[in-house]
Amino acid sequence: MSKARKAFALRIDPALYQEIERWAQQEFRSINGQIEFVLRQAVAKRLGRGADVSTDAAAEDANRESADATQSQADKSASDGSDE
Image (cartoon, rainbow, N blue to C red; front, side):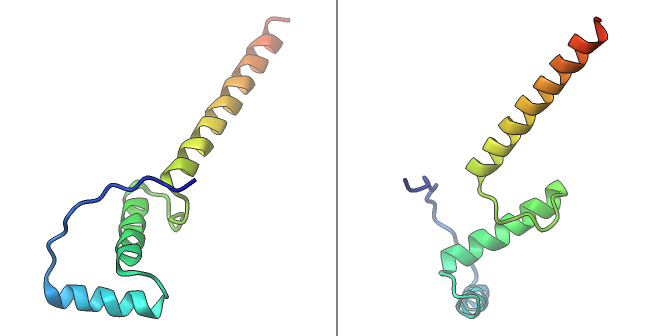
């Protein structure tokens, strides 16, 4: 199953485009892939997640749901134990 992507037009300075193109070639990515990689890094940094940029949004949602379920179960266990 492929991931859905939001398509949109990006207006960018030609010199910046050339630099991104060179960088993408060095890292064996498409230009689109390189732009997405850099944006993911910036967003992760802004959100304080450090270098955890390889995780896609669907996996992040699944991890968050799993953590919420684990916490909910732990909370339930703690409340069951405190009633004894």
